[in-house]
Image (cartoon, rainbow, N blue to C red; front, side, top):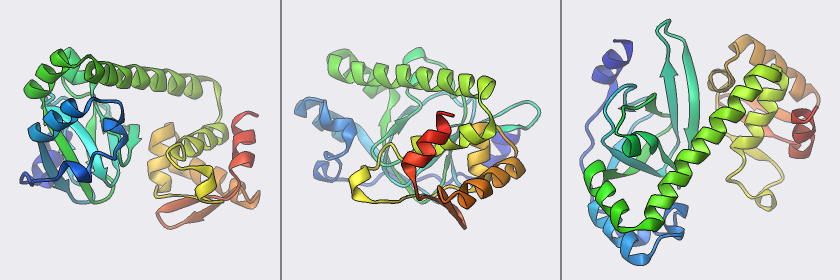
Length: 242
């Protein structure tokens, strides 16, 4: 009920906009697909935009399509019956999210919420599944995304069971830098709040704040408003392996 109310209040219906294939063909999603498949995806796609905090879809909604991020960041959160919010994942530019409900014909496991202004390329369910039947490369790509999500959730479960908050923070921050090349910057700036980080690792904000302060004292990170800067990635990796 809470999710439904939030969706009604915050979701804005976005109008489809034309987008040239040249604007999106550099995204990793298209790299391993035949050109003909990429063109068909473009022809079937719609562009949707959301503002910060808007709900893209709600938990338990029937899946309507695949969402590819052209700009911005999106988080997927699951809310328990006790209203506890847990962040399942955060996705950025070039990444797609929630492929499993498309393949298993199920409902969304969580709600997708815009962390920034977001532009999405949306592939509608029926047309996308028809194209998966035609293209083994596309089907393998989406299946690989599903397997990756399963592996990520298993690793997260292991982390929650056997690792303390300090290690979980280090592992999550390192994971957030996976799309950045080390040679591009000595430091890694992550646009994430302490509350969002707490939701990702299933810890209290107070505990996360305390451990981040210690990591800052060790000159491994720097804490700013709505952002965390990794100052020493190799040092943070050692923390994750302690």
